Length: 287
Ligand SMILES: Cc1ncc(COP(=O)(O)O)c(C=O)c1O
Image 1 (spheres, rainbow, N blue to C red):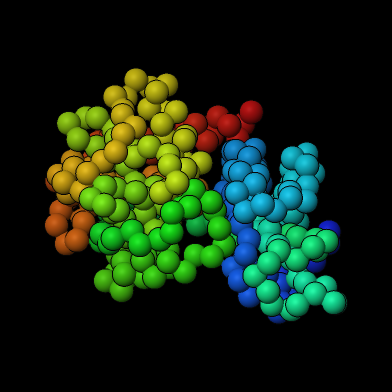
Image 2 (cartoon, rainbow, N blue to C red):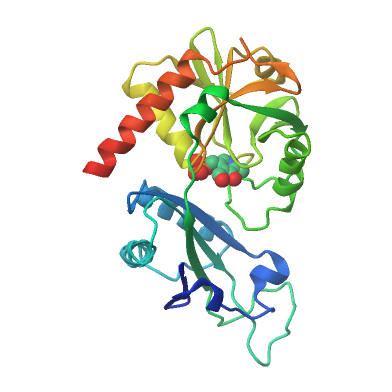
């Protein structure tokens, strides 16, 4: 399993950084997770643009041009001995150099960012898993107000997600001030009376690459859809609830806080959207 660290491709277990790296000490960095199918990255440019947005938001200069990123990512993909990959990209504010305080909130001057990438096998849901769906719990979204940044400091998301894991569920659906934001590691869609609904992009959620694909597919295939604030009552009264992410794709939530969602099985629109998504993926991969 090969990794990339600051200009070098090397075995993952040989990739080493300083303990003073600001990613380690402060969680001062951003990341992306790109799904790779049959050695082809899916929506790579969208991920790289979101990485740019995250870097801009934390005032960290992008160490690479888009073309350089593409090239590095493709090189890393080619070095793995498995073809479906979950490719992780992380950029941190680097390690203070000699003469600089080892730990200081202030941005260190003249320090190159740390760029780290590695790939692990991408395990997508089996047809049986999709047919069963997953359960989720709700929780108050107590994260900060800049959730649109894909920041590596994920402590709040981890604690929220663990609430689901503790009760053998897959995801925590988060509510802020009575409205749906997103999942702890996914976006959430609601279906009611055949209409697909998603909360609007804002500082309170990460706009998923999968979220965008789902809305594009809904538009292309004339599926009625609305992007608007969704109340807790609407979440609880949903016919269908889905979680979406690059690695989970589209997964039906069939139980929320112990109560069945709709009929308590993956709904027809979830199945249709998953089929559209799989077809779209194949088309993109063949292109
Ligand atoms: C908090 C959060 N929201 C949404 C998503 C979905 O984003 P994407 O579809 O780009 O994977 C993720 C993915 O990890 C996430 O962590």
